[in-house]
Image (cartoon, rainbow over all chains, first blue to last red):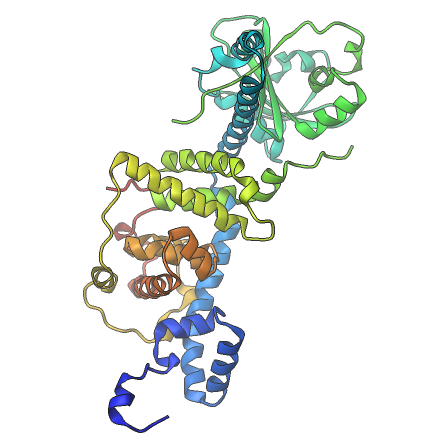
Length: 278
Length: 194
């Protein structure tokens, strides 16, 4: 160290006179040796300690505000975004597997593979994912699906959904508005809860297919019955368990109880491939 | 019945979906653009998941991918603003009537709910992201540098200037004494950018 004035003018200012360095110290963005050196400076200078405390209070206030903000951030997630992202992941995974098949298969097999992929969902590619898929999945994920009973006419409520009609499933919570019905159903037999949504089916009474949309954590089935399109979201965990118990029949067990066992599946199950975005 | 183990990618990354959406919203300022950006980010991250190092900050990793995708979109649409020199950035952060305020001037308890987020959104653009990533998302200087592709020194200086702007905004909010008084001048998170 020297008292030479010209050298002094060129030396860097002490760290505590540099606002950036003060913040770095307070926020712990230092190496161990830097920290201990600065700790010593602060311990030796009460005025400096007081000045730093004021800055520390401001930064701590910001940190608390940030913590509060992070806690509430989940509540601000748009409805359906999680389902949309999970579905996009499933679809990207499926596309990758299809690509692998393209690379490895012989020419004759290629044609078959292409035909299968078109049958599996190519014709659905132009349609946007219905909001009811998302509503059903959200109802299954969340513990809130409105009041305890439906207040609309029974023909528009979940009572028209065949598994509810035959008593396999029961309505736990239900909410109806002009757009349709959202409900939470359960099965007394084994108590898994399911998300349900329905919307008018444009005059169609019955549809030939049973659609299946894989959202990753949920599978949403859809079918037309009684002039309504019904969507039922079932957790994948439940389906996985059913697969172990009754291989190949897990989709049946999503909606029906054991009364269907041993009978042929009347549905033509179609994997949905909705268009996302926009 | 035991639940099957979730896919490692989903287990690691899905908890940060809300954070990613909030970050995307702060970049795009439009909700449906933010949703598209988040969806693309997760698909891209899923493809690149082998490159993620377990034990590191998955949120920072996702933010890096999200930010790059956002820049790519700007490039594609030729809308990317030309970066301003640091001197001009400093002037922007100072604003008019820059009077240093005593550090202890901010009574946090008097701030209306949501004031901090609103005030963060009002910080001029180059300084807003470092402030947001540090003070709302709780990321380290190094992580912020990686996400914004700027050196740590630049993170520090932008963060400091942004915080000064933020502090002045918050003080004026409190002094106005009206819960929503400066709201007209502060952009909402979902306001369309011009």
